Image 1 (tube, rainbow, N blue to C red):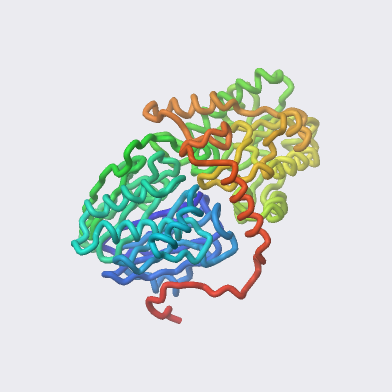
Image 2: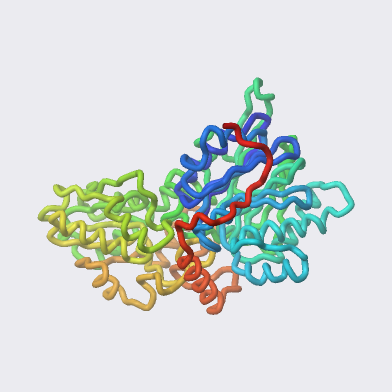
Length: 512
């Protein structure tokens, strides 16, 4: 899960990209980067940290040009602590290509070997994004060799990329001097949407085009959403702002990631025609029925959400069972989302820094806590204990998502079974671990039904972490072992090491 954005305009785009990345900050907090292009020259700044910390005034001044892209990173492949793996990535041939990627390639290791042995390209990091940009560059070179680059040649290269890579990928790339390319994997697992804004006459008039992970990035920067990029589709926006679109996959099917609706996306976004907010309301309604079937609502005094993503589900659940909805936790907004923090110790330590209980809402009451999901269980355990310390008589827990029992390999940080509290455990065993008096989970089929009802055109969802079904059909036990080994190696790296040599795109000296 990363947040990506790309823009073609006639006005400078550095501030626009910064604003869009702020709106996508929930999708990644590990690193941020922006590339802009003026003529055929590219300018890059990227570093570890939040958007507001990575970009200072001097950095923004060094990012001129009317075309650009950016990313907020949440690492699921490679090393979370290696600044060299922050995006965007750049290759100078052919043309000069800069790329950002949201997702995870499941065949990155095999491709890395193939790139070296056959394509004669060297990969310098553990990032699957570097693999992806080199595959794209190689296919662009084959497609456009000795002839002028046209949209059709770009689409031919994307078709070849689809045939070589596996997994989930939403991609935005700049081709120096030619335009902006965006494409999505044939299953549409990771989201991608584009929109337009009318430029004032002072900026040359015409339309400005933005492609981003979520509609909130478009609407929050004054753009009107046009549509989602279809699974397998590629868009090429030339330097004049003309949008060329073509389906580049053989058998595309729309299977968006269910976890986007459960947790990842902002509630004010619309992904593949489904309001994230409405999806969470629907999840709360069907979860309420599960609660009613499990225990008498008379045993519950109050329903309390665990901020932030669970609020819509908790509100709907409370209304359905006829119990008051109360805010029992105050969130410190200056602590990052614990689910996407690298490192279990950092995640565990941050829970009590992140939330504080309001004692009056708990004292002497039977409280039903509602969370969007339970992944590792450590956060839930801490929160249940906090509720008891605040004076709750009984603490029940309800999850708007089903048990997360299986690893995810499509860009969510839950790739090893050992990290998942629900893997090979019963609901009763999980209840005992987190210390709740009762534990109620969402039903997998009900979840798919109530979210899918919001867009009948969606025939299915990528829900492998819940149902163990991997839509790309190329995931094996060996893959999980390799990913687990990679994560263990990354954890052993020294997070505070200062002896790394940073690879940067040398374009101009930064002003003092």
